[in-house]
Image (cartoon, rainbow, N blue to C red; front, top):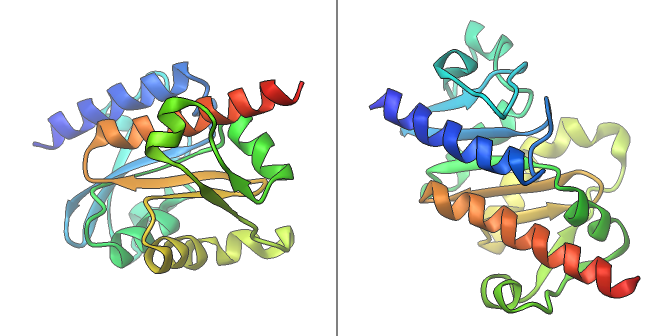
Length: 188
């Protein structure tokens, strides 16, 4: 089972990398394996060619394996613990979405697919960049749970999303990024 899961994560990761949603050492992707366990990419993973060696299985209770796991592991763990329906979680810093969120409080797509899937997304302002990473794990999962949303666009940081199906996870990032690209192009 874990082999097929790695294959699915790697395939989606490659697709997201090719679309410039993941950077070379920037981003994270994970899957819940059991109630208290999840599989996540390692710190030094390069997203265009992930293999089984590029993942680590973590328990929500920290142990020695957390040292080699993605820096985003704590955030993924909090999302899985706060949102029982989350099966897959990803973080990416897509350029158009991130740029658009720097100057806007909401993303209101004007294209068909953007309107259909995300008619209005509030941009979360983390305020205070100097301590953001210390707060991110709790704040991101809290925003998702309280607002009952699958996606959080974070000003100056990127996008966190969770989904029940891995293809829907990738689709969320792609639709938001395309909508923001079109919104930015219309401003030119």
